[in-house]
Length: 222
Image (cartoon, rainbow, N blue to C red; front, side, top):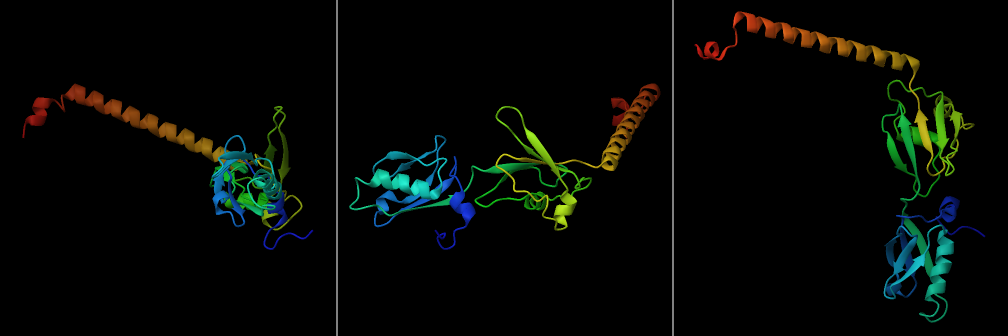
């Protein structure tokens, strides 16, 4: 069957999750309609009848059927129900490593590819080793898997490695060896400069103590 106008396959296949906000429209029954947040147990409360309906893990069409069944005894005829996901907060991925914007990213209703994720996170930060990007997929049994992709090639238009991320994936961009060496050198120089500053302060303190400069009575003398 053809998709409803303006609705993509990704939206039809999307599984409603916790913290998502859904719009429920029951034709000719505003008392059962509205925008609702899916709670931690995967349910929302239908107004007026104050009954909780479980929609977590369902597509919008499956949710429509479930709500329709709940309303069967309350409306004349078969209820006409339309469900739409307004805000998707249940699917996310994470960007780590040498990227400009690290952290958690919400995926929304559409699929997110590696290329889109790299661009969103500002992959052009200093020291990014873009030719070897890790896509890590966590596992409930503590057996995470990973693949490596060539981010440089992807950003240049190659689609071979431009895979679709799965919810919970971690995209890790390592730093180049040159950048790591420079960072270590900077830290060594910074520590050396701090040591010199401390030694200068100590020597100054010794001179003040030896020569008597800085005494309160001297400081009070015009």
